[in-house]
Length: 168
Image (cartoon, rainbow, N blue to C red):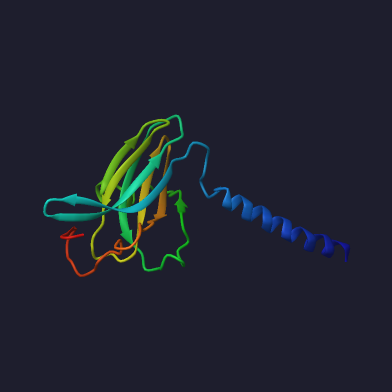
């Protein structure tokens, strides 16, 4: 009976500790000095129209440079159902979708530096996520970052084919 009371009293403590750890950013594969990726919707103006892009910011607090591959992929879940940031540490790193040729943008962020890139978005995508493949010395991480829309008019239009959208 006493064991049951003690274990029932421990459950809220364990749940609270797990929530605090999750909110603090302790996820699978995280280590001190890992890259931090954020994304927001943006536009690039051209004389013949404008392109919708995802502006990706990669911050590298670690002591080594990081090779980053960035691409935008569609998602079917609405933002309020999306799980937010996802992190994976793949065991097999030779998969096709992780190769540099499958990424829209490749870049290097130096030690202690911040890099910013514009990743093109296909107009047929209604909801999208930024997928960042970050290669550090001896390990590879795949981060799925939800894209934050910036105000009205950032909804991706499915009526226009291709990347260029006149009159954004």
